Image 1 (tube, one colour):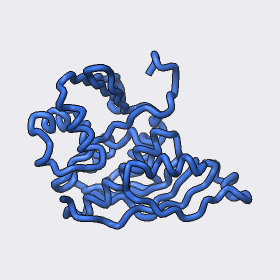
Image 2 (image 1 turned 60 degrees about the vertical axis):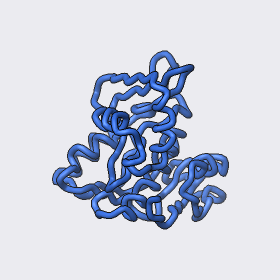
Image 3 (image 1 turned 30 degrees about the vertical axis):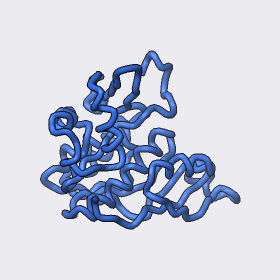
Length: 219
């Protein structure tokens, strides 16, 4: 089992607008979370439309405890992004991987700050101006699953009908030990930049569609 990490907490508001959230009744206060799949849904049900993470997402510090803490927060950001909730968060990347990793994560709501990258301002500008909902999504049909990826500018489709994939994705969804995932599946998903590796953990990047940006046929 991966080592445990402190559960995330957020400050939450009923409106995403910076000025509107200061009005009476807009603040939901500090909301402690459980680092489980229901966190984003609970925030949404509470009326949260903007959330601020308690600590940065740190992918630069080695060790499984740091990796677990980072992935717990990335899970929340991914699941809130899927619901079009604005997330205020900060990201720290290892300098030797930063130029690639920010693009891998660019389907998530853009962070406030980005550390570890030499030209962070340019990367943040690109992330903010090119971000939109459904940039990296997956869906499951009868006997298959499909991922649609627009992080690189064009539309890339990945379709799998191997019955082992749904089980592997269910494990990867909250971050799993890489050794617990079938090696051929993990290699293929890694090659397609559909999982993030942090220490010995692997995490599923795409989110399931919760809110369509356009008509379903156009996504």
